[in-house]
Image 1 (cartoon, helix red, strand yellow):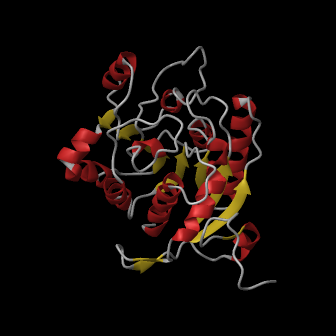
Image 2: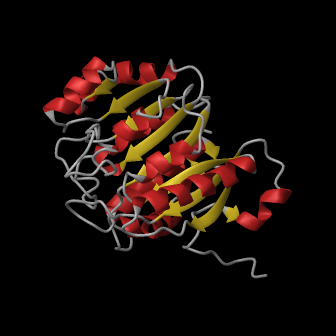
Length: 289
C-alpha cells in the first residue's frame, strides 16, 4: 500500500468504499457519480461532471476557515454508477437500486451528475412523503412534459412532485413557463428568485433553518450566475453568487439531511470555475454535517 499518494478519481478527503465496514462513525456519506446526460437540450457534456468535480475537490484544505473546523465526516467514494445513455428508465432503475444498497449500509448518498433527471431516480429510493425538498436552480423544472418527453431535465421537479414530498422549496429561480408558475402557485410550492435573495437573504435563510423533519437537497449548479458557473447545460443570467449559496448551504447545519445531489456540471476541463464552485458546494455541505 502506498501511503502518500492521492487519487483525483476519488473526491478529496474520502475513503475507499472497502473501508465502510470498519468505520464506526454514526454518520457516513457515500459519494457516487452518475454520468448520465441523454436529455440535455442545449449544452451536452454533464456526463463528464463527476470526474471534473472530483479533480477540482483537491483544491481545498481540510480546515474550513469560515466554520473554523476540519472536515471530519466519514465520506466514502463508491465511484460512478454504470448508466445507459439514451435510456432514462433503465438508468433510473439502476440509480434507485444502487442508492438503496448504499442506504442499507447506513450511508447517506451524495450524488454528482450528470443531468438533473438523476435526482428523481435517487428520490425513488428514499421515503419522501415526510421529506422537504430544497431545490437550488435557475429553472423550476415543473413542466409535465418537454418536447414530448415525460422524463427530462426540464420535468424533473414535476416527477419529484409526483412522489408526494412533504414540501418543496425552490431557490434561485429565474426561468420558467407560465404553466409552471401556475402549477407552483396552485400547489403552494415556495420559490425565491435571485432578486428576493439579494433583497432579503435572511428571510430565505430562516425558511431553511425553520424546516422540521427530514430534507433532501438538490443543487443544479446553474443556480449560480454564469459568471461563476458557465459550464452548465442551460446557463441563465442574473443568478446567485457563491457567497450567497455558501451562506444558504451553511443553514443546513443540524438539519436531518437524508440525501444530497449536485447536477449539470458540463465540463471536461481541468480546474475550470464551474467544477471548482461545484466541489466547493459539496465541501461546504459536508463541513456543516
